[in-house]
Image (cartoon, rainbow, N blue to C red; front, side):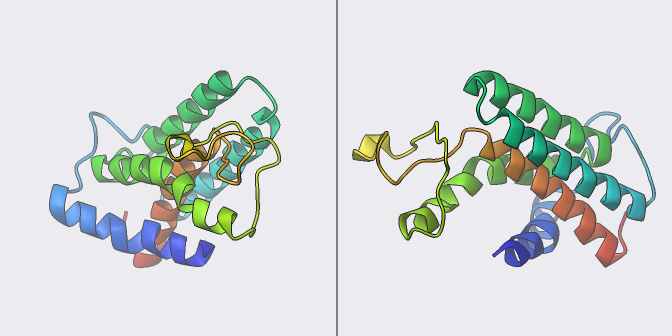
Length: 159
């Protein structure tokens, strides 16, 4: 599943969004302009950092952890990419990615040990049910999208 996600987030979906909305960057972004190999390495390393921080923050105050991780993921995008299309895709992945886990969670493929978010409460699947996520998952999906795009551009030979 992860390989499929990286292929979609790093190649197919960015190309689609760029065909629709162009490749323009926001303002003077990205903040850094390293060569593609270094950009990909920095993107993967910063994603690993964000995921590790999420692991450490999962037991802390939810809203503060969510804000911190969201800011880190946004900084990663601003520093290494800066394109509107990448921001759109990362935001969609950050919002919809955790929801895509729910079918796998319902099948018992995994669960969160300290869930703090029940997106299906309106269906009666609130606390104490299988439909539990961690609030810090969204920023991790955002960060993974940024590094998948960097890797996709590296392998495609684009800047």
